[in-house]
Every structure is written in C-alpha cells, then in structure tokens.
Length: 222
Image 1: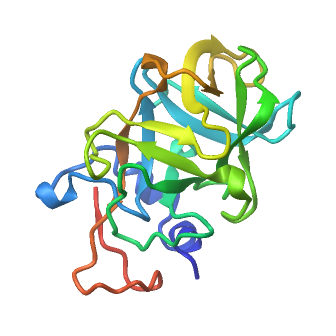
Image 2: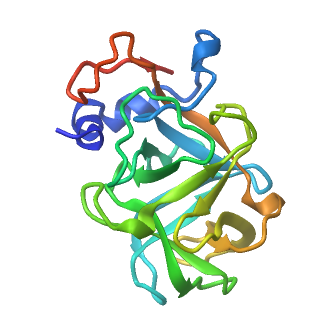
C-alpha cells in the first residue's frame, strides 16, 4: 500500500480536522518531510491552496484548484510525495531544488499544470489531475527555497518542472458555484504573489530506524 493510500485509509480526515495547529517538538522537525500532509498558505493573499470535485468549465476541463480564506476546510490538505521517477521515503526532509508531487488528499489527484489558459486572469491554468495519486510528468513541481531543506516556517515557491511557471495567486475571484474562491494559476515571472508557507498539517518524523516501508506505523507531529 503506498503512502497516499495509507493516509487516506488509516488517517481519516476527521483526525486531521482535530489538529488545526501544529506543535514543534524540537529543531529536527522544523522542516517539511516526505509523506507529510499540509495546508499551504499564499502569503500575500492569505488563502490556502484548495481543490474539490468541481471541474473547470473551460480550458482543460480538469478538476479546479483555487485559494480559500477558510481555515477549517478538509479540501485544503495536500500530501507531499516524491515523483514517479524518484521515490521520496516517508520522513525524509524535502531538499531545496527537489522535485515533488502535491496530492490532494480528499480526491487523490495531483497538483498539475499545462499550457491551457486560466479562466480569469489568462495566466497558465493549474488543475488537479490523475487517479489515486498517479498522473503524469506534468504533476511535478520544484521546491524553491533559500537553504538546503524546506523549512516549515519559510516562504517558498513552487516552480512547475515542465513549464517553469510559478504557482501563484493574484486575487481574481470566482462566482458561482465557488463564489469568492481565488484563482490559482502559473506565472512565468517571480513576484510576491508566488510565495507559500506551510500551515496546519501532519508532519512525518524522520525514521529512527531508516525503514523505507510505507506500511510501517505512522510517526507524526501535529
């Protein structure tokens, strides 16, 4: 059983909802690790990266990705995973410059982008794609951060590996049926609109035994 499926089966979203604040238990957990389930906040616009089973009415027609101001929303949890070509073992710190996938926990689809035009700003569309955590190479994002590893309290950028667009929010708001949610899109130019920070979540501890078996018991910090 892979890590995403284990989380969806063994860690019900009701457990995640009860852990709205993260606690640090030492400097060793100041970084983000593989297998962690997190909410990501766009620092400038104060919205969390979000998805749901609502498809775009234009462009790719894939599952939409938005930004929401609501804190207590289970559709804003994303699992930090490796790529199909490079395994990311649970509890391993995410390196700056590493390629990852962000998988929407409730639907099992990956954060994705391509050369379709976004519906509101006409930037690059960002969607959720795949089934049960498996999609294609357009699901891969490079973590851009200042040091050697992705720090939990650090503002970072996510660059789409294939197109080099940066995951961004510039404030455009949707109408019905997702009234008030912000458009999330890709932009080629870096700006303050492109910085994200981890917020609520479940962070996997580095393995003390070096085990790489995703079926082993969870080690989490909230």
